[in-house]
Picture 1 (cartoon, rainbow, N blue to C red):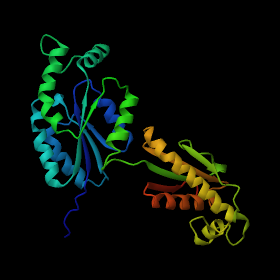
Picture 2 (picture 1 turned 90 degrees about the horizontal axis):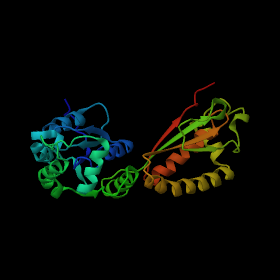
Picture 3 (picture 1 turned 60 degrees about the horizontal axis):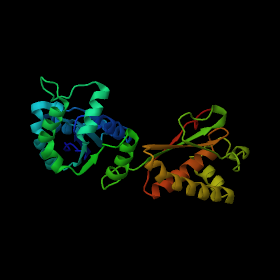
Picture 4 (picture 1 turned 60 degrees about the vertical axis):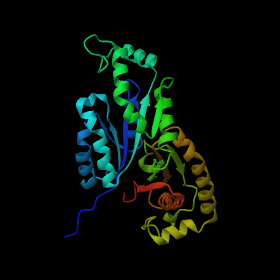
Length: 294
């Protein structure tokens, strides 16, 4: 019997002061395709790592929010990090900080009590206690972000540009969806391109009943100089857009390529565009929505 295959996972340990923006940050990681857990007791990091590594579900990017709400369990954090080291998983520690004034203002605006405010309900007392307890993990953090003057959008930009943009970070995913206009434009497309101006294999009796996934149709469409020029120009446009889309915090860009029925031209262009983008190092998926429709 073959031994179990252990999947390597990219972990982000998201921690910091209460009120500094960990909830917003975790949503950012979720948008970037991370499996997110909020308020996991640090003592369970090892167990959670094992579950992810052997799960049938593909979980390769995880964000764990670990903070003072873990109470006495917070002291187990370093043991959990040691377990990740021994297992060979990559992890980064992101610590969110903010000024006392900003934190007090945020707690007052939300009318929530600080988890360490104690019987007297002093927010400042709780913040001071929390700073002391989190100092060790802050000293060990790979990234420290001061959110004092940041709104949620600015925090997301900081994470995308300086945390996920660093080694081990996440790249923008690209989904190419081919479709037929006679069945409607995909509602979730970010960019829609119409290729009905290209030569149509439908009018060739030997190709009519084939699909864009067949080599005969592929060669028919691709041998045309208009097709080649179009794909070159469209690829330049997409490559120009991608880094700017990532800066804006997009996790995935969906490009819809349409022809009349979604059987021939859109399929060929979608396949070729996906191939070229994959050569550039992008994570690309190609789906043919209407390939098998009548």
